[in-house]
Image (spheres, rainbow, N blue to C red):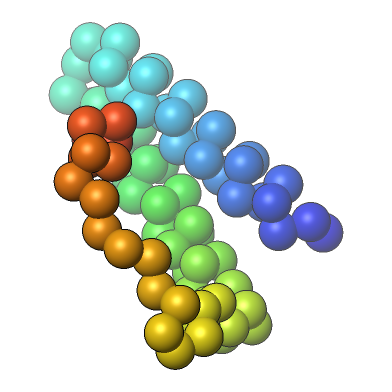
Length: 79
C-alpha cells in the first residue's frame, strides 16, 4: 500500500474525529471521540517511526544546510 495514502487516510480520519468531537454534547461522546483521536494519533506515530527506520533522514550532505531566514517565519501556520 502507498505510504502517502496511509498518512493521508489517518490524517483525514483524525481531522474528522476532532470535528465530530467539537460538536459532541455529552461528556461520554467527547470521551469516545477523544479515545478515537488518541488511537489514530498513536497509529500515525507508529507509522512515522516505521518510515523513519526505512527512509534515511539525512537528505543533505555536509555543508549543504539551508540558511535560516527570519522572513520565513511570517508565513508559518502554527498548530
